[in-house]
Image: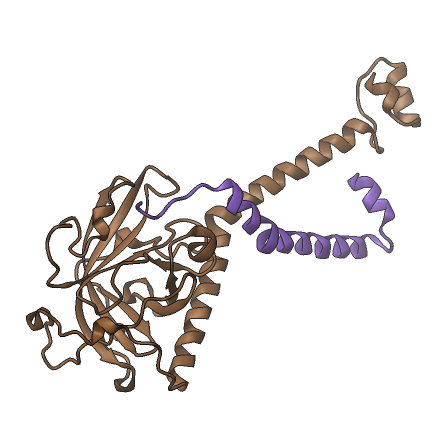
Length: 271
Length: 51
């Protein structure tokens, strides 16, 4: 049957005469099919290489470039972003600020979906790490294309309560790929047009995907009124899985106005 | 298929190899920057949020 589909070819004809099933070197049906299958196999393997490795490098580089560009833009433009009304209300606990000399943090208004309002910098992850942070935590809106997403309805950086962020841990640049490598006390700095908010990494937790209390004003204590400023980062766990979530908690340390220049926490050595 | 492609290309063997390399690089670029990102949104289930 297959032999009949093959074009007339001296080599094939000879092979048929001897009863052999060998396919000729020309353009036979099975030959082309085989080449297509091999090609598809190579493409699938390329996809895996891209998914596991190269895609992340490309996306992360793009994210960092966008973040760096934004940072430089904010350095030059004196344009003030909208500030949240919550900033005007007196802070209930002045003692929460560990450095009394530091200025009261300016609280930005909550961003719209996919609106970039800040950049995350983590010295532990290298000086080039500068992932944009935008409003919303949808994959198609923020997480797949921008970087880190801010859970709508949670606090903004510097506010008393909890700033909740989410990002990929694998694929799409994987901004939180190395979240499990953070050390206690590592600086997590959120850079915005008004300044730098330094948080200090505290601890990790692994939870079920339904555990929304990690986003509470006081993480995992939804009924407790907040007295401190927290930062919660969520991502997937284990890597490449949907099963659980990894959660990283940090606590606010200080705020520095843009006019005063970058904080020391950005340039300190990480051991 | 590939044999026919090889025969269809002009020039000596090293010109053909050069042309094939350029084509291969172009295809891989298109896959990495356009096709795979699109496919990955469809086939790669990942959730990083709590809800």
